[in-house]
Image (tube, rainbow, N blue to C red; front, top):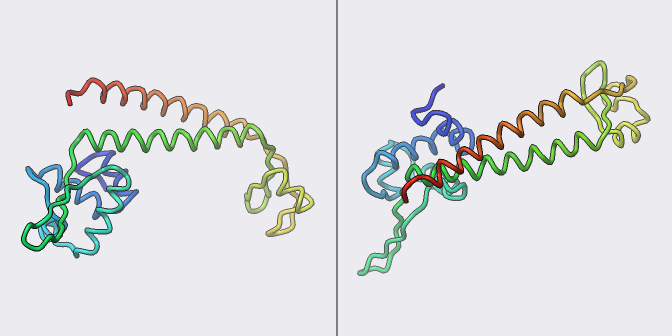
Length: 178
């Protein structure tokens, strides 16, 4: 299923669901900030679903809000908005988080020896295999040491690709007018 926002829309959908993606599209198309009630009405959604998605989106940095106080009642309402720069910055932050996790995984792969069950394919670190006397805890078959060089090579390629993307995104963001 494609997204009107392309890959960014797919990322948003994966992180906060279709409601979040629809909210982002609406806010980008809107000429002004919208209240959660206005968003729910325009999208034909329940207010609670919209609020949950908005809170998730604000935590991830895809949207922000302005608090408006009504003078007569001192009641607060919130106007939600986003723009392409905020979204680009949120995507860049997410890429940096993924890069950090990939680097941790690469370090783990390099520092450990792994064993696999030949019957069910489950994978164990040396410590886990040792604790189970090098027998699969699920089926009892002998565990076999595996060579994880391909995993390490794939992680290194992925990390390098992501580093280049991050570098390009940083250059693009720094050259945008504020």
